[in-house]
Image (tube, rainbow, N blue to C red; front, side, top):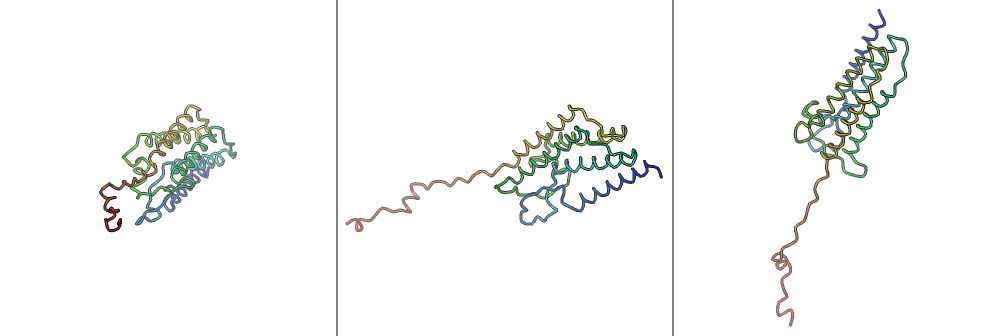
Length: 208
C-alpha cells in the first residue's frame, strides 16, 4: 500500500469524523436562550461556527496528508495563522453579539436547514452572508488543492486574506444590527379625564 493510499484513507477518516461530529452534536448551532417548544439541537445553524470548523477541517486534512506523503509535518505559515485567526475572531465576536456579557442572550429560532440558516438574516437571504460563504468556500478549496499539489502549506496572497477578512468583518458588523435590543416600552401618561376620575374633587361637605 502506497503512502498516497494511506493519505487518502486518512482523509476519508477525517471527513467521516467531522461529519459525525457535525451530525451528532450541536457544534455548528447557535447558542442562546431556547424559547418554549424548542429543544436543544433544533436551533439555527451559525455561519461563524461553520467557518471555524471548515478551516479546522482543512488544516487537519492537509497536515495529515503532508505528514503521510512526505514524512515531514511543515510548520504553519503566517498566512495559515492569519486564516485561523480570522475564523477564531469571527466566531468569538459573533458569540459576544449573541450573548453579550451582562446582557440577555438572543432568543433562538427553529432551524430551517443549514443553508437557509447561514444565509438568512431574519429578512431573507443576505448578500453579506452570501459573500462570506462564497469567500470561505472558494479560498478554502483553492488552499486545499494548492497545498496538496505543492506538498506544503500554500502561502495565500495577502490580498486574498484581506478579502476573507473584509467578508468576515462585514458579516460581523451586519450581524450586530440583526440582533438589536428590543425597543423600550413607553407607558402612556394618564389623560386629564382619567386623572379626574381617579382623583375626584372634594365634596362641599368635606370642605366645610
